[in-house]
Each structure stands twice: as C-alpha cells, then as structure tokens.
Image (cartoon, rainbow, N blue to C red; front, side):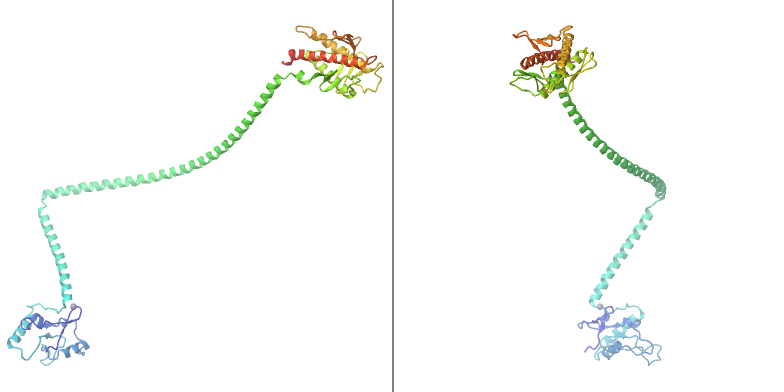
Amino acid sequence: MSHFCFLCQRCSQALKLNHSVEPSEEPGASMLISAQGETRETPEGGPPSKEEANFENLQDGAFCRTPHPSSGGMSWDYSSFTLLGRLEPWRSLNSIQKTIRDSSDILSGETEVDHPLCVDCTDYLLEVLDVELAITESDVQNYKRCLETRKWVSGDDREMLQEKLKGLELEEARLLQEVAEVEKNQERVAADLEAAQAETKMLEQQEKQYWKDYSQLKWQQLELNEELSSVEMRLQYAQLQCNQLEKTDVFNATFEIWQDGPLTVINNFRLGRLPTVPVCWNEISAAWGQTALLLLALANTIGLEFQRYHLIPCGNHSYLRSLIDDCAELPLFSSGKQNVFLHNKFDQAMMAFLDCMQQFKEAAESGESGLCLPYKIHVKKGLMEDPGSSSGFYSIRTHLNTEEDWTKALKLMLINFKCSLTWVSLRYGRK
Ligand SMILES: [Zn+2]
C-alpha cells in the first residue's frame, strides 16, 4: 500500500494522487524530484528538520537514496533525493527500467522538472502565464508594427516630417511669445483693474456724500415748501382781509351814528338827556369826545386847520383850547354838578365846537361836489336851525335852555355829522 504523499510547492498542501494512473505510464506523476532540493536544504552536518523527519518516516522504504558522488560511496545526501513512486516488490523490471530512464533524462536536463502543484495553484499559475503570454504577444505586435513603419518612412517623408517639425517649432516659439505678451497684458490689465477699483471706491464715497447732501437739500426743500405754503396761506388771508378793508369805509366803520328814540347815539354813547331818559354825564362826556374826534378827523381829511380854537379829543375829557383868549381850555365834558343854568365853560366849549363845525362846513361846501348839510348852524347864538320844525331854532347851550331843546340841538348836530361822514367817505374814503 501507499505510504508516501506529495506536497504542493506553492501552498504546501498535501496532494492526492490519482491511483488509477500506472506509475510506469505516468512518469510525471510517479517520478518526482523534490523541487526543494536546493531551497529546503538542510545545513551541512545538521539534523534534518522535523518535517523532513516525518516525511522520511512516512516514506519509509518508498524513496531511493542516491549515492553522493563525492561521498566516498557509503554516505547519503539527504538534501537531494528523487521520488521514484511506489517501490513495490512486485514491480516489473520494465517499469523499473523506465523509471531509471526517466531519471536519467531529468538528470541530463533533457526533461523539464515538473513541480508538484495542487489543482488550484495549477489553475492560478496557468492564468498568470496566460496574462504574461498576452502581454508578450502585444509587445511583439508593437515591435513588428514599428519595424514596418520604419520601413515605410522614405526619404521624402522624412524631409517632410523635418519641415513639419520646424514649422511646429516655429509655431511653438510664436506661441511662447504670445504667452509672454498675454502675461504682459495680464499685468497691465491687473494694474488697470486696481486703478478702476480705487476709482470705484472713490466714486462710491462721492455717491454716498452726494446722497447725504441730496437728503439734506431735500429736507430743506420740504421745510421751505412748507414755509412757502404757510406764507402763501397767510398772504391769501391777508389779501382777503385787504379786499374786505378796501371795501370798508374807514369813517363809517369808525364812527357809527344812529338814533335811539329821542336821543342820538355815537359809538354806543348817547349824546343828550331827557327828564324821561336820564343819561349819566360820564356817557355824555364820552359821546362828546367821540364827536370831537370825528370833527377833527373830518377837518384833517379835507386839510382844514381851525381858526380861534384848537380841538383836542381826549375821551370823556376832551376839550378845546382857545387860540385868542390866552390859551384858555374849554372843557367839552361836564359832571352835571355845575349849575347848568348859569353861564359856564361847558357852554363856551360847545359854542366853540359849533364854531369849528361851521368852519368845516364852509370849507366842505366850497369847490365841486361840495357838502350840503341839512341843518344850518348859527355860531354866534349857538343855535341849530331845523327848517321843518315849528320852533325852528334849538340852542346848543345849557344856560336858559331845556334838556329837550338841548338834546334836539345835539341831535341835529349829529345828523349833520352823519351827512358829513357820507360825503367824506364818498370823496376821500377810497383814496
Ligand atoms: Zn497548491
């Protein structure tokens, strides 16, 4: 029976031999030489390794030890041996001879040594060899093609190629020059870009400042517009008032004269008194002040300066100053305590007032469109004449007079003044 085995030289796994193959017919399988004869060599004189020892035991009697040529005949070299297959005692002579012949072929190098390999490693080895073979064939094809190409290139073609090479070199030089120019341009463009960026920054700052100024000016414009509209509104209002004032008559607006029954009123002050209508003297004095102011305004309007008297309106303390009687002051007011039936300065003042009024009447009656008063004035007697009345004359004095007649005389006087107001408004009011 078999007492030996073989190891794969790549993965070192035990090989299974196909026993159906006759050793004499398959020398590659039955006759193996240890491929590790050199690599697994035991050091000289040293004991064999354990693996080898086991191997030896397993192969007990199954290998043939060959005498070492230099061993002197009887020593054995364990480092190199050849397996000869199963050395059965019943082997035929023919098989032994074949084995010896194959061994001689191996030793003489006529037969390649087969390394024992397992099936997997053999497949792997075959694949690797196939790849190497394909690469080698490709290289061979390339070499062949190069050789053929070299043969095809003629002299003319070579010259043409040389010229083409020169042209390409010139092109390369030109392109290099172009590259240099482009680089120079790039530097210039970079400088321009930097300058443009600086200018952009400056312009942005300017724009910012402009917007700031614009906002301030816009704000000012809004304020001025508001002020302008305010001024326009005030102007419009002033224009309205001006129009109203232009339509307003200053004399009629300043002096209002109307009748309140038997009494006449000037600017809300009653001038005169009756036993049935007692008017306080303070009010009468105020009414005299308004009347004196009216006469002075009329005289000033027509440019009249009174002779003999100087009229001084001063509220309820108005008076006349005599220009001929040592500047005597004639009070145009009364407290009512004096004896009105005696000759007094109040009567003199009213007489003097009638004198002034007569001067105005004479001045106003002269010239075109002259004034025409309805009631005549008798200065020396101090009378007002009413043509329509039965008695006809009413004294302005209080001495030897009744309150009724005195009040009537004052009424006629004020009616004359009302006519004077209308006349002076028509003639001078719109100027
Ligand atoms: Zn293997």
